[in-house]
Amino acid sequence: MALSISENFLLDTLQAQELYHQHAAGLPVIDYQSGIQPAWVAEDDVFTNVANLFSTRRFCSGSPLKAMGEGEKDSADTDTDAWQRFKSWADMLPYLVGSEQYLLTHLALKTVFGIDTLLNEQTAKAVYDACNEQLAARPLTMRGLLQRFGVECVCTTDDPVADLRSHQVAREGGAEVKMLPTWRPDRAVNIERLDFRDYIYQLGQAADVDILRFTDLLEALQRRHDFFAANGCKLSDHRLEEFYDEPYTDSQIEIIFEKAMRGQELFKAEARQYKHSILSRMAEMDSDAGWTQQYHYGMICDNDLSGRAVGGLDTGFCAMDDYSTARAMLSFFNRLQQKGKLTRTLLVDVNPSGSDMLCTMAGNFQDTACPGKVQMGIGWWGDIPSADIARQLKVLLRYGLLGRSVGVSGGVSSPLSYVRYDYFRRILCRELGNDVVQGLLPHDMQLLGSTVENVCYHNARCYFDFY
Image 1 (cartoon, one colour):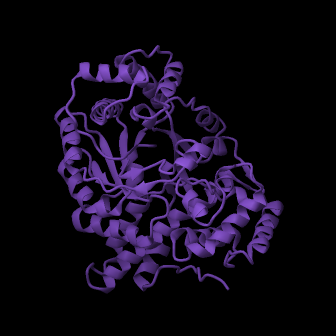
Image 2: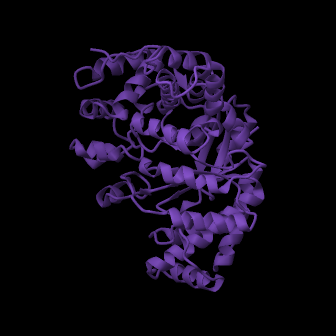
Image 3: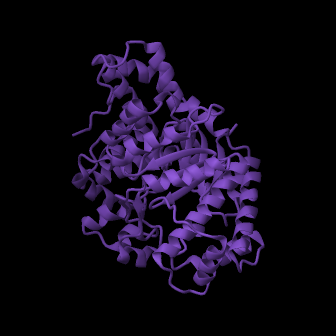
């Protein structure tokens, strides 16, 4: 048995096929929110085993493995034998039929290896051997894979303490793919976490600042922010559970910070005051530097305490949240706008049910100097169904400006995950093609073709100022 993945996969109208093949398929990819490890690109890692091309530690994959009865070691131990890791994934895959994980796994096998056999317990060894035979004859490198997927620019996700050495190596080594860092300061924001004090010490060392007070923390962050800017950074990325608008004074924040550094437990209101303060300060840093800021919110992470005990924090087990954060978001951005400190902003709710609110909220903060200055990002959290991607596109058509969208936030975390970009482009063309057939859009292929090209590539190239 094989999955039917043809050149017209998902393109169920002639209009969709024309839009995809003539306007979308050949465009480069700008991966502006990537989980790819910088060292993979800098060192141009060579992949000789297909198991290393799939990542079973992606931040939402631990749950399916545990649901299948796999031991925690199997889903978290990176030293597990390559064949056993691949077999565990193959054994589980039939139980994911109908999910995006199921579909994208087969799409990756077809795209990279030309294999359209259904992957399951019975076929695992044959597929594994066939892939590895190809890799033995012609090994794939990280940069080679990026070129195969048409990736022009990768923005990795980096903590403020990162030395960015891999980015420097890639730049000095003349890598064909542009690799830029992205400022991801979540650990400086999450004051309630048990590792907060240890992290502040690391940050102080990286910035050469003795952090004793909140003002010291701001100085350290500014120094690292400047360092990132000097290394080509143009983006910040924040992962939030929600937005915060609790009133605070500078003296209150100093007391809260010092309390946390003594290891004292904070009240929830204190943590929220601190987060409001530091997020506001960093938004002003982004504005001063001319960066774009991204906010991915609506996600609760590290939910499985046993999984956390084995793999540590930030190793998976996330869930969508249902916070109502519209008023806090409005207050947060209003204050920045009144100060003249609201920079280009992408808002991504990992819970697609919030897309309507998000798209209309973005409309409140536009600027004639920058088209689409604040916009709803098309989010790809974990393996959301194609219907949710289509829904976000519909929301942009209804309430926003699809023609100004910078496209999908891919969240790529393993080499083969780059099939997501082609998948998104096919969904985009399918939705527009279907609307033409239904009479909802004009049969103006020049107009729609230009829209597709802008959403898939040109808007991002202009918006982010990477070049």
